[in-house]
Length: 273
Image (cartoon, rainbow, N blue to C red; front, side, top):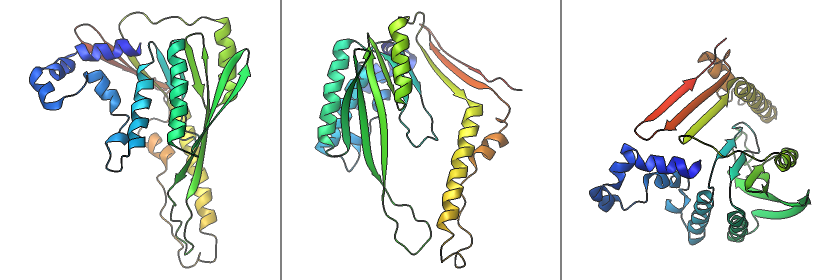
């Protein structure tokens, strides 16, 4: 579970060093597990921080601490909609509080976040649409590049005491239907952090992303200035890099870190062939 894992980190040698009186007087930090998670939310510490950004960082971190059990997260680093898929244990009261916090974050980012609600199987599904302006990319032409808008969407719902969230509404609805039929089991044993990487799918996604970038660059270089700049810098071929590292014929990589009472163990399994 998320709290169990953080508590185990606090009891580890690193956690005991962190709690040392002299270390605390020097750093003045929270428990080490909480501090490590807090590093994810660095917006409030930057030189361009504002009162709004500090409040947003605080709210996001508070929502993370509301997760009171097992957390499962899936990501696709090569997807344009980089919102993660997630299943997490959360109490109904905390989920309702998190929705109120989401609305507050939307207020602090006027025009950037839109929250809508729909009913599905007698439950509320919330749709979050986020619009961000990305810096313009220089395509090598004389025409000034314009900033691009990036729009991402994700849907979430609370089924019993399970948070369901993801960028695909069909997946969210299918997961809701399944959870209404099956009660999730609570994790037992020592707290674990498990990372699973589907290497073949990662290589395929990298190759697809490279092909799309190459097509965009060909389009950008096919204008009237083609003769003046025949060679544009090429992006790295991620699929070739992964295959060059010997990851072309492997299966799913599993890395498991277990926080035992007197030790931390890390196991990695990578099927080859």
